[in-house]
Length: 335
Image (cartoon, rainbow, N blue to C red; front, side, top):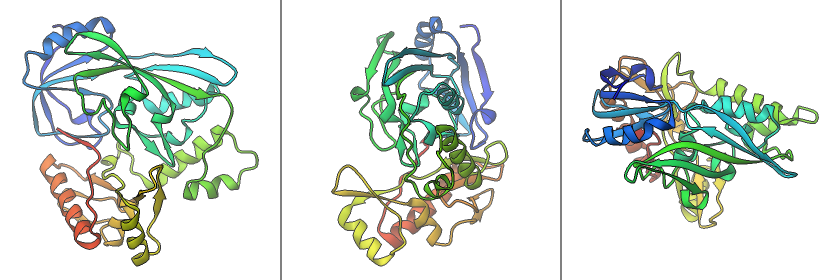
Protein backbone atom coordinates (compact mmCIF):
# COMPACT_ATOMS: atom_id res chain seq x y z
CA UNK A 1 0.00 0.00 0.00
CA UNK A 2 1.35 3.45 -0.87
CA UNK A 3 2.40 5.49 2.12
CA UNK A 4 3.49 2.52 4.22
CA UNK A 5 6.71 3.26 6.10
CA UNK A 6 8.99 0.73 7.77
CA UNK A 7 10.89 1.16 11.07
CA UNK A 8 9.74 4.71 11.68
CA UNK A 9 10.48 6.53 14.92
CA UNK A 10 7.46 7.48 17.03
CA UNK A 11 9.30 9.88 19.36
CA UNK A 12 7.48 12.96 18.03
CA UNK A 13 4.12 11.16 18.01
CA UNK A 14 3.86 10.56 21.78
CA UNK A 15 3.68 13.35 24.34
CA UNK A 16 5.61 11.31 26.93
CA UNK A 17 8.47 11.54 24.40
CA UNK A 18 9.62 7.98 24.94
CA UNK A 19 12.05 6.63 22.37
CA UNK A 20 10.08 4.20 20.23
CA UNK A 21 10.22 2.66 16.75
CA UNK A 22 7.31 1.02 14.91
CA UNK A 23 7.89 -1.86 12.52
CA UNK A 24 5.27 -0.38 10.16
CA UNK A 25 3.46 2.98 10.04
CA UNK A 26 0.81 4.49 7.80
CA UNK A 27 -1.42 7.57 7.83
CA UNK A 28 -5.19 7.31 7.48
CA UNK A 29 -6.32 10.45 5.64
CA UNK A 30 -9.47 9.47 3.69
CA UNK A 31 -12.34 7.03 4.20
CA UNK A 32 -11.47 5.34 0.91
CA UNK A 33 -8.31 3.97 2.55
CA UNK A 34 -10.14 2.03 5.27
CA UNK A 35 -10.57 -1.26 3.40
CA UNK A 36 -6.93 -1.24 2.33
CA UNK A 37 -5.84 -0.63 5.91
CA UNK A 38 -8.05 -3.50 7.09
CA UNK A 39 -6.31 -5.83 4.65
CA UNK A 40 -2.89 -4.47 5.59
CA UNK A 41 -3.55 -5.01 9.30
CA UNK A 42 -3.87 -8.76 8.67
CA UNK A 43 -0.21 -8.89 7.64
CA UNK A 44 1.02 -7.90 11.11
CA UNK A 45 0.76 -9.70 14.47
CA UNK A 46 -0.71 -6.59 16.08
CA UNK A 47 -1.69 -3.01 15.34
CA UNK A 48 -2.92 0.10 17.07
CA UNK A 49 -4.63 3.32 16.06
CA UNK A 50 -2.61 6.40 16.91
CA UNK A 51 -4.25 9.77 17.49
CA UNK A 52 -2.46 12.57 19.31
CA UNK A 53 -0.28 10.14 21.28
CA UNK A 54 -1.17 11.96 24.50
CA UNK A 55 -2.26 8.90 26.45
CA UNK A 56 0.27 6.26 25.46
CA UNK A 57 3.25 4.46 26.96
CA UNK A 58 5.17 3.09 23.99
CA UNK A 59 7.74 0.29 23.92
CA UNK A 60 11.20 0.82 22.49
CA UNK A 61 10.19 -1.30 19.49
CA UNK A 62 6.61 -1.99 18.42
CA UNK A 63 6.46 -5.22 16.42
CA UNK A 64 3.33 -4.27 14.51
CA UNK A 65 1.42 -1.75 12.41
CA UNK A 66 0.66 1.79 13.56
CA UNK A 67 -2.28 3.48 11.81
CA UNK A 68 -2.09 7.24 12.41
CA UNK A 69 -5.60 8.72 12.22
CA UNK A 70 -5.51 11.99 10.25
CA UNK A 71 -9.19 12.19 9.25
CA UNK A 72 -10.17 15.89 9.26
CA UNK A 73 -13.32 17.99 9.16
CA UNK A 74 -15.91 19.66 11.42
CA UNK A 75 -19.55 20.35 10.53
CA UNK A 76 -22.64 21.68 12.27
CA UNK A 77 -25.21 19.06 11.26
CA UNK A 78 -28.40 20.53 12.66
CA UNK A 79 -29.77 23.29 14.88
CA UNK A 80 -33.05 23.37 16.80
CA UNK A 81 -34.37 25.46 19.65
CA UNK A 82 -32.42 23.50 22.28
CA UNK A 83 -29.37 21.89 20.70
CA UNK A 84 -26.70 22.10 18.02
CA UNK A 85 -25.53 18.79 16.64
CA UNK A 86 -21.86 18.95 15.65
CA UNK A 87 -19.72 16.24 14.03
CA UNK A 88 -15.94 16.21 14.08
CA UNK A 89 -13.68 13.76 12.29
CA UNK A 90 -11.46 11.65 14.51
CA UNK A 91 -8.15 13.27 13.56
CA UNK A 92 -9.19 16.77 14.60
CA UNK A 93 -7.30 18.33 17.51
CA UNK A 94 -9.53 18.15 20.58
CA UNK A 95 -8.88 21.62 21.98
CA UNK A 96 -9.32 23.25 18.57
CA UNK A 97 -12.69 21.49 18.34
CA UNK A 98 -13.71 22.82 21.78
CA UNK A 99 -12.74 26.31 20.61
CA UNK A 100 -14.88 25.84 17.46
CA UNK A 101 -17.89 24.85 19.56
CA UNK A 102 -17.41 27.79 21.90
CA UNK A 103 -17.19 30.21 18.97
CA UNK A 104 -20.35 28.74 17.43
CA UNK A 105 -22.47 28.88 20.60
CA UNK A 106 -22.56 25.11 21.10
CA UNK A 107 -22.03 24.75 24.83
CA UNK A 108 -20.96 22.21 27.42
CA UNK A 109 -17.39 21.24 26.48
CA UNK A 110 -15.66 24.29 28.02
CA UNK A 111 -14.46 22.35 31.08
CA UNK A 112 -12.62 19.96 28.76
CA UNK A 113 -10.50 22.74 27.23
CA UNK A 114 -6.79 22.16 26.65
CA UNK A 115 -6.98 18.39 27.12
CA UNK A 116 -4.35 17.07 24.70
CA UNK A 117 -5.20 14.59 21.98
CA UNK A 118 -7.73 14.15 19.21
CA UNK A 119 -11.51 14.05 18.90
CA UNK A 120 -11.32 10.35 18.06
CA UNK A 121 -9.68 9.54 21.38
CA UNK A 122 -12.29 11.41 23.43
CA UNK A 123 -14.98 8.67 23.49
CA UNK A 124 -12.44 5.85 23.81
CA UNK A 125 -11.08 7.25 27.05
CA UNK A 126 -14.29 9.06 28.07
CA UNK A 127 -12.14 12.10 28.82
CA UNK A 128 -13.13 14.26 31.75
CA UNK A 129 -12.00 17.23 33.80
CA UNK A 130 -13.36 19.76 36.28
CA UNK A 131 -16.63 17.95 36.90
CA UNK A 132 -17.47 17.15 33.25
CA UNK A 133 -17.19 13.95 31.19
CA UNK A 134 -17.43 13.87 27.41
CA UNK A 135 -20.01 11.05 27.55
CA UNK A 136 -22.64 13.56 28.62
CA UNK A 137 -22.49 15.27 25.22
CA UNK A 138 -21.86 12.45 22.73
CA UNK A 139 -24.80 11.50 20.55
CA UNK A 140 -23.08 8.76 18.58
CA UNK A 141 -19.70 7.57 17.33
CA UNK A 142 -19.09 6.42 13.74
CA UNK A 143 -16.56 3.60 13.53
CA UNK A 144 -15.00 1.31 10.96
CA UNK A 145 -15.07 -2.35 11.97
CA UNK A 146 -11.83 -3.92 10.76
CA UNK A 147 -13.29 -7.41 11.10
CA UNK A 148 -16.37 -6.92 8.92
CA UNK A 149 -14.84 -4.02 6.95
CA UNK A 150 -17.99 -1.96 7.42
CA UNK A 151 -18.92 1.41 8.91
CA UNK A 152 -21.18 1.37 11.96
CA UNK A 153 -22.77 3.90 14.28
CA UNK A 154 -22.62 3.34 18.03
CA UNK A 155 -25.13 5.38 19.99
CA UNK A 156 -24.31 6.70 23.45
CA UNK A 157 -25.68 3.66 25.26
CA UNK A 158 -23.77 1.24 23.00
CA UNK A 159 -20.50 2.98 23.92
CA UNK A 160 -20.96 1.76 27.54
CA UNK A 161 -19.21 4.76 29.02
CA UNK A 162 -17.80 4.62 32.54
CA UNK A 163 -15.06 6.44 34.40
CA UNK A 164 -12.20 6.84 31.85
CA UNK A 165 -13.46 3.78 30.03
CA UNK A 166 -15.75 2.70 27.20
CA UNK A 167 -16.76 -0.18 24.94
CA UNK A 168 -14.42 1.25 22.31
CA UNK A 169 -11.43 1.13 24.62
CA UNK A 170 -11.93 -2.60 25.07
CA UNK A 171 -12.69 -3.43 21.42
CA UNK A 172 -9.69 -2.39 19.32
CA UNK A 173 -11.16 -3.76 16.08
CA UNK A 174 -12.92 -0.40 15.71
CA UNK A 175 -11.33 2.66 14.13
CA UNK A 176 -13.14 5.81 15.20
CA UNK A 177 -14.09 7.79 12.09
CA UNK A 178 -16.01 10.66 13.65
CA UNK A 179 -17.84 11.72 16.81
CA UNK A 180 -21.20 13.49 16.81
CA UNK A 181 -22.02 15.73 19.76
CA UNK A 182 -25.39 17.07 20.92
CA UNK A 183 -24.56 20.39 22.55
CA UNK A 184 -27.00 22.70 24.37
CA UNK A 185 -27.61 26.19 22.98
CA UNK A 186 -28.68 27.41 26.41
CA UNK A 187 -25.75 28.44 28.57
CA UNK A 188 -25.35 26.43 31.78
CA UNK A 189 -21.84 26.82 33.14
CA UNK A 190 -20.40 24.05 35.30
CA UNK A 191 -18.32 26.05 37.77
CA UNK A 192 -18.69 23.99 40.93
CA UNK A 193 -15.18 22.55 40.84
CA UNK A 194 -12.81 23.94 43.50
CA UNK A 195 -10.60 26.80 42.37
CA UNK A 196 -12.59 27.20 39.14
CA UNK A 197 -15.58 28.33 41.22
CA UNK A 198 -13.42 30.88 43.02
CA UNK A 199 -12.02 32.35 39.81
CA UNK A 200 -15.39 32.48 38.06
CA UNK A 201 -17.03 34.15 41.05
CA UNK A 202 -14.84 37.18 40.41
CA UNK A 203 -16.29 37.63 36.89
CA UNK A 204 -19.52 39.54 36.47
CA UNK A 205 -21.93 37.70 34.14
CA UNK A 206 -19.41 35.03 33.05
CA UNK A 207 -19.68 33.53 29.57
CA UNK A 208 -18.66 30.11 28.20
CA UNK A 209 -15.55 31.77 26.77
CA UNK A 210 -14.70 33.09 30.24
CA UNK A 211 -14.99 29.55 31.59
CA UNK A 212 -12.84 28.16 28.76
CA UNK A 213 -10.16 30.77 29.42
CA UNK A 214 -10.30 30.02 33.14
CA UNK A 215 -9.85 26.28 32.52
CA UNK A 216 -6.93 26.93 30.17
CA UNK A 217 -5.23 29.24 32.66
CA UNK A 218 -5.69 26.72 35.49
CA UNK A 219 -4.38 23.77 33.46
CA UNK A 220 -1.37 25.75 32.26
CA UNK A 221 -0.52 26.71 35.85
CA UNK A 222 -0.58 23.10 37.07
CA UNK A 223 0.37 20.87 34.16
CA UNK A 224 3.60 20.79 32.14
CA UNK A 225 3.58 21.56 28.44
CA UNK A 226 4.46 18.32 26.57
CA UNK A 227 6.44 20.42 24.09
CA UNK A 228 8.77 21.33 26.97
CA UNK A 229 8.82 18.16 29.07
CA UNK A 230 7.45 14.74 28.22
CA UNK A 231 4.22 13.76 30.01
CA UNK A 232 0.75 12.31 29.47
CA UNK A 233 -1.05 14.58 31.91
CA UNK A 234 -2.74 12.66 34.73
CA UNK A 235 -0.91 9.35 35.05
CA UNK A 236 -3.28 7.66 37.51
CA UNK A 237 -7.05 7.38 37.77
CA UNK A 238 -8.67 8.94 40.78
CA UNK A 239 -9.57 5.82 42.81
CA UNK A 240 -13.22 4.85 43.21
CA UNK A 241 -13.73 3.17 46.58
CA UNK A 242 -16.69 2.25 48.76
CA UNK A 243 -18.41 5.05 50.63
CA UNK A 244 -17.50 3.34 53.90
CA UNK A 245 -13.79 3.18 53.00
CA UNK A 246 -13.87 6.81 51.86
CA UNK A 247 -15.43 7.96 55.13
CA UNK A 248 -12.85 6.00 57.12
CA UNK A 249 -10.04 7.66 55.16
CA UNK A 250 -11.58 11.10 55.53
CA UNK A 251 -11.92 10.54 59.28
CA UNK A 252 -8.17 9.87 59.39
CA UNK A 253 -7.30 12.56 56.83
CA UNK A 254 -9.91 15.36 57.07
CA UNK A 255 -8.50 17.33 54.12
CA UNK A 256 -8.69 14.39 51.69
CA UNK A 257 -10.76 15.49 48.65
CA UNK A 258 -13.75 13.13 48.29
CA UNK A 259 -16.22 13.40 45.41
CA UNK A 260 -19.78 12.12 45.18
CA UNK A 261 -20.82 9.69 42.45
CA UNK A 262 -24.20 8.74 41.04
CA UNK A 263 -23.84 5.39 42.79
CA UNK A 264 -24.21 6.31 46.46
CA UNK A 265 -22.30 3.21 47.50
CA UNK A 266 -19.05 4.60 46.09
CA UNK A 267 -16.94 7.74 46.27
CA UNK A 268 -14.07 9.07 44.17
CA UNK A 269 -10.96 10.30 45.97
CA UNK A 270 -7.99 12.34 44.77
CA UNK A 271 -5.01 10.29 43.61
CA UNK A 272 -2.91 13.46 43.40
CA UNK A 273 -3.59 14.22 47.07
CA UNK A 274 -2.56 10.69 48.14
CA UNK A 275 0.74 10.94 46.25
CA UNK A 276 1.42 14.51 47.36
CA UNK A 277 0.93 13.68 51.07
CA UNK A 278 3.58 10.98 50.76
CA UNK A 279 6.08 13.71 49.90
CA UNK A 280 6.58 12.48 46.33
CA UNK A 281 5.82 15.72 44.50
CA UNK A 282 9.08 16.68 42.77
CA UNK A 283 10.63 13.25 43.35
CA UNK A 284 13.07 12.16 40.66
CA UNK A 285 14.58 8.79 39.79
CA UNK A 286 17.09 8.97 36.97
CA UNK A 287 15.41 10.40 33.89
CA UNK A 288 11.84 10.19 35.21
CA UNK A 289 10.06 11.91 38.07
CA UNK A 290 6.92 13.37 39.63
CA UNK A 291 6.13 16.86 38.38
CA UNK A 292 6.92 19.45 41.08
CA UNK A 293 3.63 21.33 40.59
CA UNK A 294 1.25 18.35 40.30
CA UNK A 295 1.76 14.98 41.97
CA UNK A 296 -0.57 13.23 39.53
CA UNK A 297 1.78 13.88 36.61
CA UNK A 298 4.86 11.78 35.86
CA UNK A 299 7.46 13.33 33.57
CA UNK A 300 10.26 12.24 31.27
CA UNK A 301 13.39 14.33 31.69
CA UNK A 302 14.81 12.34 28.73
CA UNK A 303 16.00 10.00 27.61
CA UNK A 304 13.71 7.53 29.40
CA UNK A 305 12.24 4.19 28.42
CA UNK A 306 8.95 2.43 29.02
CA UNK A 307 10.56 0.40 31.82
CA UNK A 308 11.83 3.58 33.54
CA UNK A 309 8.40 5.21 33.70
CA UNK A 310 6.63 2.00 34.74
CA UNK A 311 9.16 1.33 37.51
CA UNK A 312 8.43 4.78 38.96
CA UNK A 313 4.69 4.17 38.65
CA UNK A 314 4.95 0.84 40.48
CA UNK A 315 6.92 2.43 43.31
CA UNK A 316 4.21 5.07 43.73
CA UNK A 317 1.41 2.49 43.58
CA UNK A 318 3.12 0.38 46.26
CA UNK A 319 3.61 3.34 48.61
CA UNK A 320 -0.01 4.46 48.21
CA UNK A 321 -1.28 0.92 48.84
CA UNK A 322 0.90 0.47 51.91
CA UNK A 323 -0.04 3.82 53.43
CA UNK A 324 -3.73 4.16 52.55
CA UNK A 325 -4.88 0.69 51.54
CA UNK A 326 -5.86 2.07 48.12
CA UNK A 327 -4.76 0.66 44.77
CA UNK A 328 -3.98 3.12 42.00
CA UNK A 329 -4.60 2.30 38.35
CA UNK A 330 -2.52 3.71 35.51
CA UNK A 331 -4.54 5.91 33.13
CA UNK A 332 -2.50 5.86 29.87
CA UNK A 333 -2.63 2.87 27.55
CA UNK A 334 0.45 0.65 27.80
CA UNK A 335 1.58 -0.95 24.55
